[in-house]
Image 1 (spheres, rainbow, N blue to C red):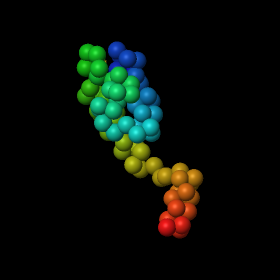
Image 2: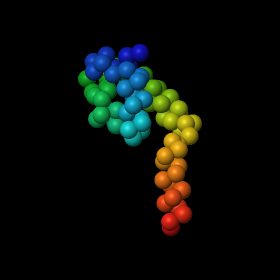
Image 3: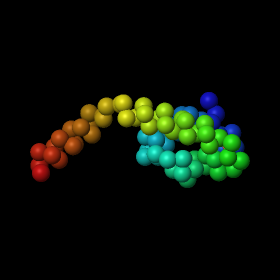
Image 4: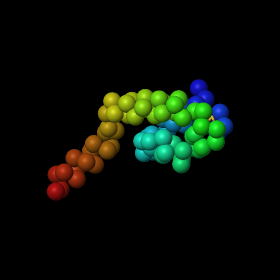
Length: 76
Ligand code: FES
């Protein structure tokens, strides 16, 4: 679904931005241009951002990252 029509940004784009570290509406504006034109998408974008952040919090860390962290902890 399109979230920001002015910049053709979808929920999927917002999910990717969260994967890449976005955590605020300001981050989305800087990375994707969300709410940077007419601003009508701000509320919907914020809701999508919250959902994406919640999904990310529930997703376990990738095995590769876990292994790296474990090795670092053992070395310390
Ligand atoms: S719909 Fe997002 S800035 Fe206009």
